[in-house]
Image 1 (cartoon, protein in one colour):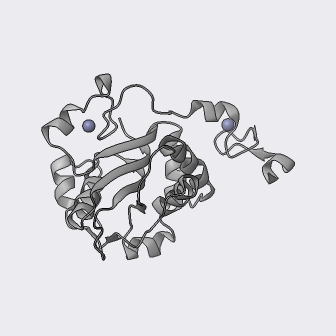
Image 2: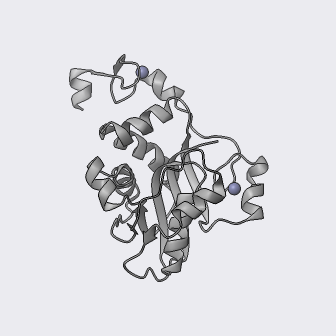
Length: 219
Ligand SMILES: [Zn+2]
Ligand SMILES: [Zn+2]
């Protein structure tokens, strides 16, 4: 409302905007469309499970992503994650919430950061996004149900098998999750190794279903 009254500028192009983005930049967002694998949200003919998920099923049951991880979605996700642009959590969270509006889960859990990483960054972008999604979908958010017990070494450039080995044992559920259906929220999904390990951990603690709700998906 303040933006409407005083006039704002678009986060991306600095043109006039009523919200964080002007209408042309909003229209440029790479909203995912076309048939996707229901399990991992990669492009897949006829929306059938993709070859990778068929060959080795991940621990998560489904993935919903709002955007492709390409320009300008990557700029927005990185600005939220690394530049403290927390206002972007509302924009990105609402894009994700619109995608999952019809879904029902018992609880939303953001992918946790380790205490050390959280102290260094000052916030967890996944929690900021999850807050917006929880409000919009009236789902319960509980960031205490899954903890990150150790940091993962840098994953960039590593093949999937090494990423999986890297992330193994990184998470811990302090309580049992008997019979719960859970949505795990994160900003971006790349190989899915981290989300797979979160899902493995949640199911080992008793969760019956785990779905990923992510803002952006790499192709
Ligand atoms: Zn713009
Ligand atoms: Zn798949």
